[in-house]
Amino acid sequence: MRGHSILPDAPTRWRPQTRAAALAALDASRRYAARLETAARQQEARERELRAELDKLRAGAAAGKQEPTDTQQRLTRTEQKKNDKVKESYKRKRQTERLVDRLKQTEREVSRKEKALEQARADLAELRRTPEEQRTEQVSKLAHANAEVTKLSRSRDELNAKLKTLEEATEQLQQRASAAEEKAQQQETALTEERQQTEAAKRGRDESQAQIDRLQRRLESEQERRSAAERRVEELQKGQGSPPQTSNPTMGQSASDTTLGRYRDLADALEYDPANDQLFKLMCQEVTVSARYADWQERHMERITARRRDMNQTQEEQAFAATLALRWRLADHPHLRQAANTSWLQIGAVLTPRDERYAALLTHERMADMQGRMAMHRP
Image (cartoon, rainbow, N blue to C red; front, side, top):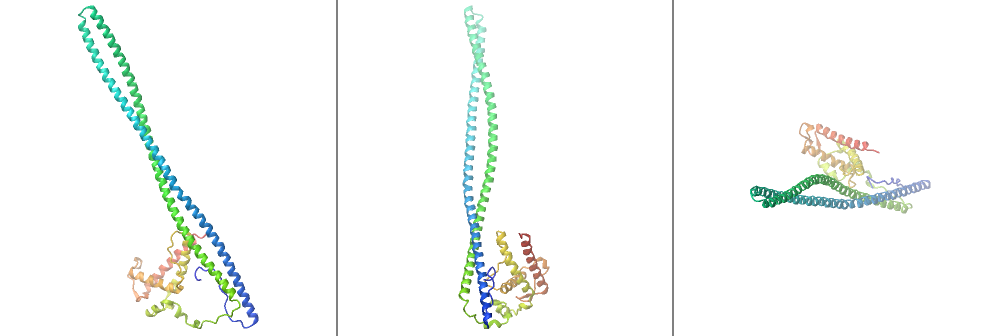
C-alpha cells in the first residue's frame, strides 16, 4: 500500500546466477519475512491500545447519560420547595386580612358603645331633675356603661397590640418572601447553569461518540493493514522457492509519458509540459505536506480541513489537478493582493509570469502555515 503503509520495502527480485547468490537472495527473503512478522506484531499492539481507548470513551459516554436525569430531579425538587413557600406566604396573608377585619369590627363596636355612653350621660343630665331613686338607677347604669367602655377600651388596646404584632409578622413574612424569591432566583440561575452544563455534557457525549466513530474507523483501517501484512507474509512464505518473475517489458517507457497518468490526454490537448512548470513541482511538495497535516489534524483537532492523500492517484496526478484548480480559482476570483485581474499565458494551463509568482507565493505560505502548526504542537 502507498501513503500510510508501514510495511518494509520488499527485496529486489532478480534471477541469481550462482549458488551463493541464490543463498544470499534466500537469506534476504527470510529477513524480509521476519520484518513483516515484526510489523504484524506492532499492528496487534496498536489494535489493543485502540480497543482500550474505545472502551474508556464508551464508559465516559455512559456516565454522561446519567447527568441529565439527576439535573432534572434537582430541578423538580427546587420547584416544589418554591411552590410550598408561596403557599405558606399566601396563608399568612389571609390570616392577617382576617385579623384586620376583626380589628375594624371591634373599632366599630367601640364607637357604638361610646355613642351609647354619650346618650346615657345626656339622659343622666336630664334625670338629675327627677327623684333620688331614678338618679341612683341612672348612676348604676352609668357605672355599668363606664365599665363596658373601660372593657372595650382594653379590648381595643389588646387588638391594637395584636395588630401591631401582626404587622411586624407581616413585615417579617414579606422579608422572608423576598429572601425566598431571591433564593429562588439564585436557584433558577443555578439551574440554568446546570442546564448549560448538561447541554455541554451532551455535546461532550456527542463529541466522544464522534471520537469513538473515528477510532472505530482507524481500528478498521489498522485491521485492514494487518490483514494486508499477513497476506504479504503468506505470499512471501509460499513464493520463497519459486523463480522470480521476468521484468515488465514496458519499464523502458519514458517517465514523461506516464507522469500524469489519467491526465496525460488533457495535458497533451493543452500542450502542457510538467517538466517546465515550477508551480507543478512545488505542488508535488505541497501534496505531501498537506497529507502529513491531515494526519496531524486527525490526532489533535476535531475537524480535518487539509487535503488528504488520494490513494487512487499518483502524487503527480494529484499535484497536476491541484495546480490547475489553483490557477482556475485565481482566474475566477482574483485576490485584492494581485492588484489586477488574472491573465492566461496559455489558456487553461499556464498564467502570466506575474500571476504564476503569486500562485507560488500562496502555495509557499500555505505550506509554511501547515508546517508551523505541526511544529508548534509537536510533543
